[in-house]
Length: 154
Image (cartoon, rainbow, N blue to C red):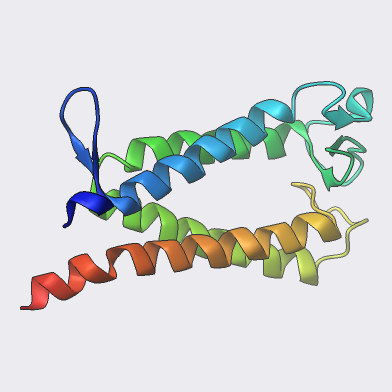
């Protein structure tokens, strides 16, 4: 590890880039989960349901959300911050969390958006955001631990 790829916290703990990435992704998920419960940021807030495609609440007026959807974002954020305590936890969070989002992307493409199967709920904008998140998380998890894995082989 190089000094440029790490930084020390107030307690002197050095975080690697993969840990910083897991923390950043976790913070973003927490923020999105919180914003999903704020009227104005979430349009049609009064039409938000616990789950299901009937929820007409839209985060930023674009992404369909429900109480369940927001809770999932909050839990995913907490998981990211908890797993960022170690390099292996950070890598697993980014790669396997990314895989979960890629599966959710595929699920959103396959199901009918107006059916009971759309219980989260998701819309077309959510689907493509899930793809970008999933691919980005997997790429971060692999790219930011490549140097660490290669150093272990020598």
